[in-house]
Amino acid sequence: MLPRRYLPSLPSLLALEAVDRLGSASAAATELALTQGAISRQLQVLEGQLGVTLLRRERQRLSLTPAAKDYVHEVRKALNMLATSALTLRANPTGGSLNLAILPAFGMYWLAPRLPAFVRAHPEVTLNLTTRLRPFDFASERFDAAIHYGRHDWPGTHALKLMDEDVLAVASPALVPRALEHAAAVLDHPLLQLDSRIGDWGRWLAHHGLADRRPPAMLFDQFATMTQAALHGLGLAVLPLFLIRRELDEGRLVPVFGDHIRSEASYALVWPADRAERAPLTSFRSWLAAEVASGGT
Image 1 (cartoon, helix red, strand yellow):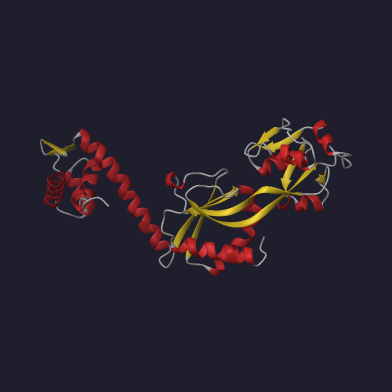
Image 2 (tube, rainbow, N blue to C red):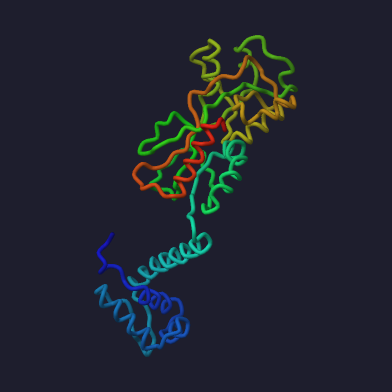
């Protein structure tokens, strides 16, 4: 926390911002329901506290110096942040917000069906969800926690494992009308894969005894679009089993060779280790842990 001498009073900052925006002390006084003299005194107090000349007074008109213009730009952002925080508090006075980054496919198919139960159990928590495809630095993002996929090697974080992942090589029956006779036969077909998981086909082939293969494939950034591509016969795809159960049950996707296999990584709730844990995150983490323990995976 900076020394208090660097923290001007809110009335002084409001006066400076209003003068800059409206162009005169009299207009600022009208907006803030003060006298013109009160506005002038607030500005004098601010200049004295900062030890910097902020205003030029010419012919009964005030204008900000170039340095003050830069300063008030930052002040305005801070005032808007305070106002937004106040609105958030008024909207949820008994709880708090939880800003969560989620993987789009996992969020849609695994998390979203469970969230109504969390909302019923914790109406005091406002949950804000944003999709992120890859892990990120919590220091540079506004999130309290994230759901990531990986080997739980994210530095500076704690993690709660949510579920393992089983994957299955599938295709449209129009492209592969019957199961292939051997695993290597997938190389005779166009392949699809995520750009964040470019080793999936290599691992699948290694599992079936064909090591050191890295076949080329059409790249996608999300499972949703890759699944649609597979459904329309663009190629074979290695997809998480929990994402395609309906398509398999309806026969719109079919296994191309063998059974599903276990991925090397898993899904986890991740949160920064260097922050004090806030109540909304504690509630969400505890609820997820109970879901996992009860067989919610």
